[in-house]
Length: 487
Image (spheres, rainbow, N blue to C red):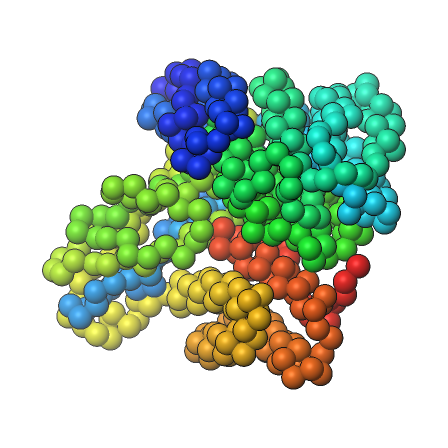
């Protein structure tokens, strides 16, 4: 196939959420981003129309159905799409990391000390060709270091970290905008990543969740910046931070204690250094007469004839699983669903990999039963469980623990049919632990407000990561209620 032509300038306004377009602050963002031509990245849709290279060397795509032989009575099927990054064979060059730290008054003391220690550890882990941008924000943003190359400016970066102090309010948008401004001008020879660390709620600048999400979305789609978020402590606005990370095609982490910050920053840096592909989008196209009836994962964009997911970056060895339920036509069939993955390699080329899942009709019920794939049904049960855990945590947060316990108990009962799988048994054990914990809080036999809020944030973060497609075993936030302790 031919190489993709250079990407044209994209219109940020055409893809910006309406609530963002209506704000004066976002108007400046649109004006700044819209004229850009995305260098060697082209995370937007127009580059996907060019003829891509075969990407099977970098990414594998596997489509599995819960049943490949169906009787005339079967009207639907479950489909699992596994997308796995292989070892990268095209170098991505340097990593441009912007660490954006909440320096409002609530970060004073141990939290800021831990933030400084984590930043020092991250600087030590950067490769000589990598660059660091360090920004703190309170009432406004302060750029302590802008694009410092570690080969010659590592000591300068360490010195800047020691200058971090906590005071003032929380202008999250100020910190993000300063980071995007620096990365927008970075050389297009590697990865662009923002890591936002915050322990509170935005109360200066853009404060609503939709506007903050819109910033991350615009700079991801138009410039190629991924935005990871780290929520610290039980007072954090996890809904906002999770939305920013989803729009920025990256991870959201919740950490109850600031002492865990160095581990998370280390995890993100390791993923950046192991990056296999960027700009990964997966489009699910149903076959003739087939309709996608339900999508269990978050982050789906529904089109007239398909569903698309923006998965962002994948590190070597990482996998994402997308799960959908399809409604099937009567009569003979063939292709039930095709998954097309397009992405960028380290050379800046656009690649594509596709795979299809097929089903056939049979008048032999025994043959239909023999074609069952229990792994697909198990994957659905686990992701459905994550969805129900999110719902139960919302009930806990609203004060209706009794309804939350009922939701968790029903969830556990649904999983009993799949308990033979070790991953399902681990999920059941966690549900039992959750039910016992919240029942204890409800009856007054367990500690109340602080640990309970921490548990809600932890479980919700774990569920959100799994619903983005991360397998349960790879999810970072996998808490035990025995560990819940407020700072």
